[in-house]
Image 1 (cartoon, rainbow, N blue to C red):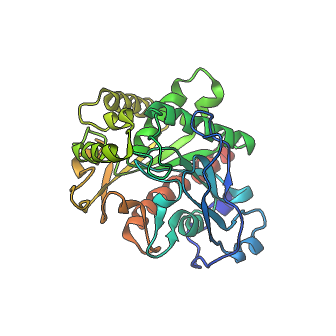
Image 2 (tube, helix red, strand yellow):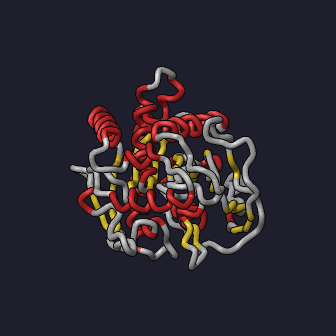
Image 3 (cartoon, rainbow, N blue to C red):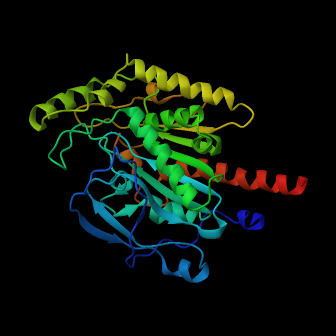
Length: 348
């Protein structure tokens, strides 16, 4: 496998369009999954047939796209026998396991149409949870789950997925947007502090995190609170626990950040790669949701993406500067996996 990891991460062929096959999913924890999922509209997005012919172990199904709530871990791509890393996408406030990463104007879903070609030795997963300020889609109240509940669900679902495929020791890279960054940080804390050894693996195997518009310094998110209050007056309740975390003076935000930085310090000899991105464009009528000063993590790289808060997770093609900025970080971390494995093999 080591010589295969030396290959270029980029495929020279652009993704083609399609054939049908369901998007794999795993059961999520009981406290997040309704007894019955709401009826949804299904569309299809197809993968490349030539990959199936050249590499039988690679799973490149067309995607069955569900418009509506989608919770738990969903498999987008599986590199088969040569897979060396799990890339886990975590959406943000009012986000969706699929739509958050979809550029609707071009129809490009970059994890399934671009990233799987550029990081072929990967399994790409997406974690979904109810992060609506108000549950407009279902017409009911917003999820009452707290941030910590979502974090525990992320760990539990990811561990279950990896146990089912006997890949518990595989390395992990997270790509997290907005609130999803705080969920990811809290998930690593939960994993590390758990008394159950099988849950410890998530933190232990994490080698990199891409933060997209994630508040780290208690940014002024009064705009979110204002929107939440306005929506609440029309659509019943909001999840006050989630909104309170995003306020600048939130004690919960401080705890999440403090615990996460403790993990980073403890991993000094086996560091977690960190890169943060901030939105360069304002959201109409609100300005920046997470401004540059709040997206920064002291001591780590910070780059801008020329989009607003929701647009910074959507890329129309492989040449998009934002996509390339994210890709280069992930490629570097994945390359290091091959280097470390080669060194272990040679020393043995």
